[in-house]
Length: 536
Ligand SMILES: Cc1cc2nc3c(=O)[nH]c(=O)nc-3n(C[C@H](O)[C@H](O)[C@H](O)COP(=O)(O)OP(=O)(O)OC[C@H]3O[C@@H](n4cnc5c(N)ncnc54)[C@H](O)[C@@H]3O)c2cc1C
Image (cartoon, rainbow, N blue to C red; front, side):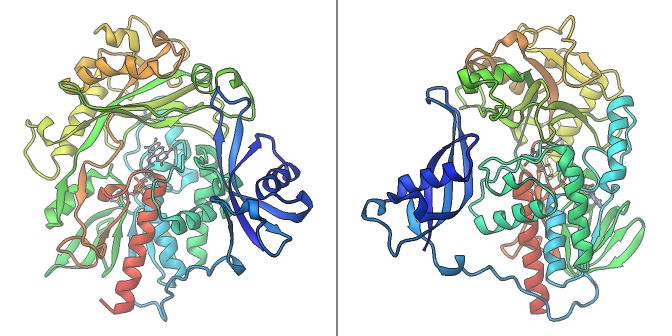
């Protein structure tokens, strides 16, 4: 009999014998009656009030008994169906027709959409404006070193999308367990660590993503897909509410089904879609700063006396503050433990910040964005249109570029100076990114945002016991945490009013983060497969 047992506590360095012992304790049987134990989910519990840090796991095992012992008939212990359940089936097309479906954008959404279509025999063409991951990496390194921006191949554009130079956190809030499992298995099959299959908060790290993503592309090609780099979608051609073609590098490609997974940095695509009459709508989003702290201080705050245990890894945090009269809500976002703050740009003269880390998360600083919501009322200077949020982002990014000397240096201020409303006389020598330039942040960010940050940052950091404000450095502006636009969709995944066009991923405004964008790409592909099967 195969059983599943939840909430099993095991020491950090557990082995099979320890796991077997703990599972048998829970099931009230002998360890010898338990075999083939596997962990299917694992979360770390290192709260300082515990006697020792532990993993709390969900384990599956074979039980050499005909029935669960009486004591084991309790919530969290259950028998699994014979054969482990029926595998999910996805439609396979009887034959792939012409024109082939096109997927635009090789970020998480586009890659997963293309992979799903290719496995179903639909022979998709995946077009990507940037370069493959290997060619992209040196361009990005040069940008960080010399400020030389390639507007088509950079931190945000190219194979792997915005997620390539990232922490590679695979946080999943979705309840779609099947799709999440499928995505994690695919990543693991392409070289991601086994922990992505079981950890509650898995991460891959930018160094590993640089090998995982090209393997994923190889799988798309092996399954009959085609991938074209340095191929930029310029516009879409729509006739009578139906997609007819896409224009790529000046050439028209006939196309009846196109998944648009261009991310939310592709402002030229938003503009082209607006001009082509595609339904777009302004979406509230959030802007703010990136805050950096010594990782050792974060570890001490989160792990207490366990800090420094090499099995624990770098600690992370999540902080939120509700809105109060006169002060907006604020939340930490995209924490990168043991990582680095990075400069990002995809258009000349505009600058934004973000964070990334490597698989070991072993750098001496940790950073996270602290964001404050903004909406249409904040950008009255811009025409009230679907792209008003984009115009607002551009103004902030342009100011930041100029304030730091027009060379993609990172505007920075010590937190204590920000709170005292002054520019830092000097910045710490060990900032994780360079070059950094001291800047007065009140000139960079909208007043309601600086006002909120001024009021809430210190109380929020108080929740991290022992973290010192004079050790914190702020970088700005953080403008690209989510899409400022919705590409409005119908329930069947198609663009409202344009048959054949399927907006997907973060740029469509319905997803945010690597996992949610990847899942959205899979769903978009399923919609296209359904349309192809129905001949519509
Ligand atoms: C530095 C950084 C760190 C991040 N860290 C994390 C993290 O740790 N965990 C997490 O969950 N999320 C993270 N994110 C967010 C995450 O990367 C995005 O949510 C995710 O990549 C969105 O996926 P997407 O496929 O929808 O779009 P994108 O990843 O933006 O991909 C869009 C792709 O479309 C291409 N494209 C754009 N326009 C065109 C065109 N006209 N023609 C052809 N191709 C085009 C782009 O070049 C790009 O490759 C991070 C983002 C950044 C920038």
